[in-house]
Amino acid sequence: MAFRALLLWAIQAVAGQDFDVLLQSAVSAKEGKGVTAAEAHQTGKSYVAQAEEHAAVTEQVASLLGVTSEAVSCLRQQGRPPHIVRANNEALLASLASLRALTGQLALSGNDTSILPDSVRENLKTVYQSISQTLFANLDTMHEEDQAEVRAAYDSMVQCNTEQAKRVSDTGDVETARQAVQASRDNHRDIRNDEAQLYEENETAWAEFSSLRTDTAALPNPEACEPFSRETLTDMSKFFKEEMSIVTWWNRYRPIFLAKEMAYEAANGNLSKYREKADAAQEHFESAYRHWQRLQVDMCGDYNLCWDKAKDNFNATTARVQESETARKTYYQSGQAALCHLQVLLQRNNRTFDECTELVHNTSK
Image (spheres, rainbow, N blue to C red):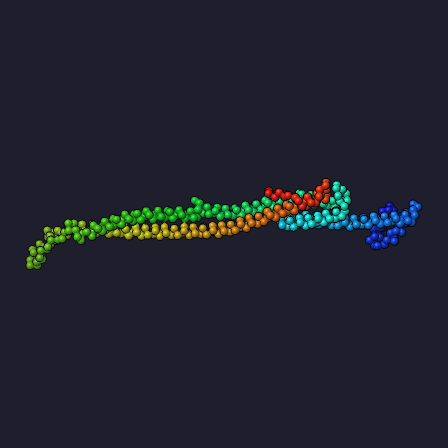
């Protein structure tokens, strides 16, 4: 107990530069055992040396605790994005470099790790276990998140094709409009065909009717009329008899003329009415076609906008993921280097820190 009290006092005395007090205390401690003042003086010097060494160790151990505390604080960021984790791993490596220097000062060598205080070892074990448990899990999570973003960006481009395919499907608005155009076109064509038939009939009726102007066989000129005489009633009645040549001509050829005239007027009337119907069908067809064309233009415009946006997003995503991949590799390398340094500090087993700087990292996964 006296030695421990002396050692504690020695540490305090060294800190206060009170060397005489320390010597006197050493002499007092030895007087009960019959030692001489010279022996006490020499013993005091020995105790002072031990105290100075312990004070140095205590200071370095305090530094170790501080460094390992910094290392532990780095673990709080292990689940963050790669560039943040990499920065913290680099800070961790810097802390481990400080540990390396401090443990070198403590003459750490071979398998002797007893010089590391338990608190330091526990902190280092915590750091090692945390990195070991989270490093690959975080890498896998980051990889899966990146792949999910790439798939989502790719799906956005596919969605552009899907939306376009949906619009041109059997129930899509563009295909429905196209079918309406086809039906309207077929109807217009049928009506125009009927109109053409009526046109031929009208032309035939007109040709037959107009031929009466020149076809003397179908409609001969009437015979010359006998002079009309008012001299007697007999002369007058003779003129009005049905046997009169002009009356005979009238009665014979009037029905022929009227029939051809009526046939032409009927054919012309039918043609005019059907032409109006055909013109209306054509207008409907053209309107349906313009609507279909407008939908096609809109669809192509929407597709181009969708594709350009999705493509830009995909390119940006792949570029970011490539950067993230590079960051993950450096994250992996820094983590492996940190683990190597920690293993050297905790286990040694004739390993050196140079091995940690010469690691070959497999980042192909």
